[in-house]
Image 1: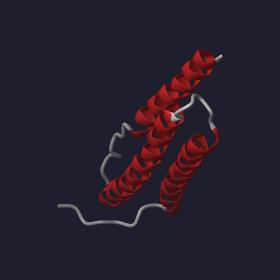
Image 2: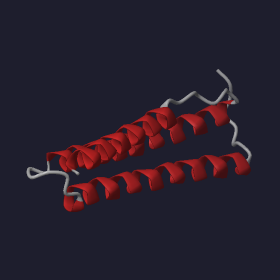
Image 3: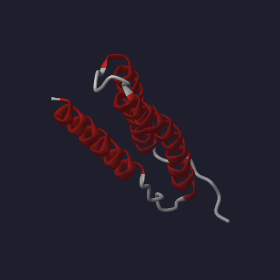
Image 4: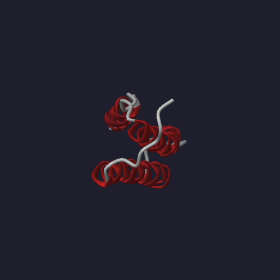
Length: 112
């Protein structure tokens, strides 16, 4: 087992900036999801808006948890002189946003 070393502050701060960027993305998902439920009128029962809202808020929760985990793993890897772990969080988040956008587009076109 190697001894932990304090990483260069520039890398520590870069890791923190990435973490904060994920948190901003999470907040955008929360805001978008709540706004969808409140303001989208995609049908008489508003279930499409609820689906979009639930998916976006869930994406925000997953992004918040994943960002914290990633921040911790990166910090541990830097302190131990290891490789940074690979994450699927950006791909999952991007795919979720594409799916939500397509759902919104389809229901908007269907309603007209």
